[in-house]
Amino acid sequence: MKNIMKRVAAVSLAAAMTLGMTGCNNSKGSKDTLIIGGIGPITGGAAQYGIAVRNGAQLAIDEINEAGGINGMKLVFEYQDDEHDAERSVNAYNNLKDKGMKLLVGTVTSAPCEAVSKEAAKDNMFLITPSGSSINCITAGDNCFRVCFTDPQQGAIAADYIAENMSAKKIGIIYDSSDSYSTGIVEGFEAEAKTKGLEVVAKEAFTSDSATDFSVQIQKISNSGAELLFLPFYYQQAALVLQQAEGKLNIPVFGGDGLDGLAKEEVLGDKLYVSDGVLVLTPFAASSPDPKSVKFTEAYKAKFNDVPIQFAADAYDAVYAIKAALEKAGVNDGSMSASDICNKVKKAMTEIELDGVTGKTSWGADGEPTKAPQVMKIVVENGEAYYVAA
Picture 1 (tube, one colour):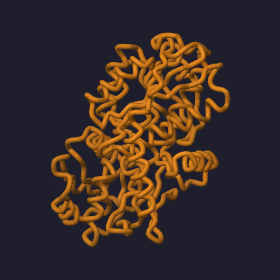
Picture 2 (cartoon, rainbow, N blue to C red; picture 1 turned 135 degrees about the vertical axis):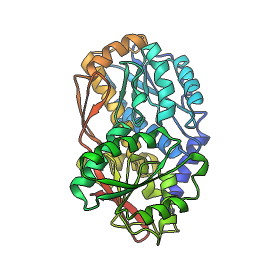
Picture 3 (cartoon, rainbow, N blue to C red; picture 1 turned 90 degrees about the vertical axis):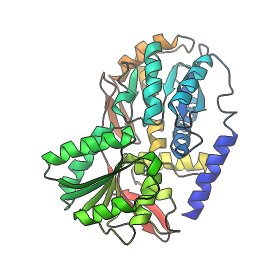
Picture 4 (cartoon, one colour; picture 1 turned 45 degrees about the vertical axis):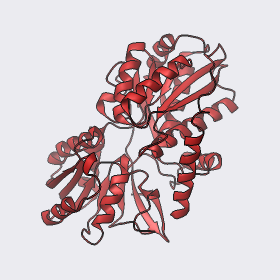
């Protein structure tokens, strides 16, 4: 576990140090060069997500270029840091436009994505977010698509899985009331839970300003008689909850894709709180035996000396979705305007099916993906945490 964390820290530091180099190619694009932009947090608390997206997208772009490109065009990837901040994300978007961006992979997190998608809709710039799961991330225009599930979808899928595969009927929830990602998942979970015979016996909130001490919420969950703890927020706070719940709760734990990364988080030294395994709703796990996952994981490790998380897999699939749509649309001139490319690609997106590392995915005209959900369990052995299929 400690070695894994050292690798994560090293990658984060390297990313921050080389940020000024990322996107240093100032080409505006040409007939045989197509510029794809990317935006996400490289520094700050959400950096692990942004680094994973950047790396996953870069791996896909390198593979595509090595195989000859797309319709005679080689790809150039320009990626900028937004520090998980909406204003900085819009600034990054404008900088990328100045650099000649024709399509955007991003943004990574929901609040920045909501802001950037409005700008992209005004420009008719094709946008595909790997991981922006808020409903409003892609509602600004028909130019916007996503790879991941929406927050309410995640909540509904989680409720379905618990009802169909677990014995727990009484659910305790801890959630971040200041975050649209967390509240969106809770909304979908509660609505579906009612139809599935699940009872929410405790629903305890915290905010970003009070995300360090969860003793009150944990005690209320314990007093409620909850048989399962649902954690619909990000892994940094979840790690603290699990640490503080050690010895106080002995019930299964289930979370959304924001918990991806928890297997890398060091909690109580080399010990992670696990009761029946922490279950994570995620379409990808590096330990999966699926051949596509194995191939992607090995290539990612070789290139970045790190283990990929779901966000990297989503970004990898986002780039290959762009490739499939460009090929379907017959786009072969990187000097075309972003709007003209978008008109072709957004139609083609509704006509393709991607067999990617996060599963088979197709898209509707609303930009939403259709794909099968997967649930993974975190297993801890000999101080190392990894995922297995639940």
